[in-house]
Length: 113
Image (cartoon, rainbow, N blue to C red; front, side):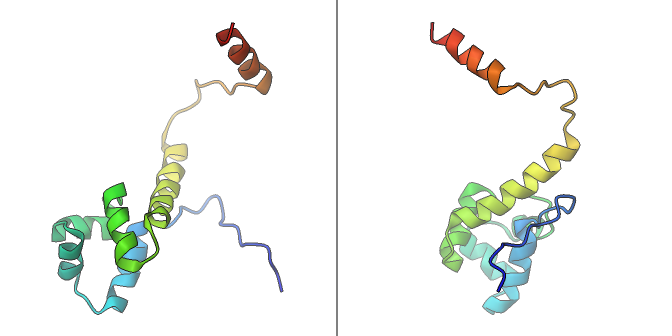
């Protein structure tokens, strides 16, 4: 048996938590409107999340975590992974230097003097 966890292809966009939610909703036996009402959001807001047009906020993550019994953290991690993947590809960081450990240590020593 292989105990090494599968690694996601770094070039593949992580799944938006709304897509995961879209897969889960039919299994609940509830309508999207009922789920939106239980979450305290509009049907349109839920649809935007399901279509990955809006993020799953920390507040909605807390509600989803309570609703499905898996906690807010998993929903927040999915959203953070999705956001980070896009930020790394869409943000121009070409002018931002990468500091070495020596530079960071020197800066820390200087700030403590």
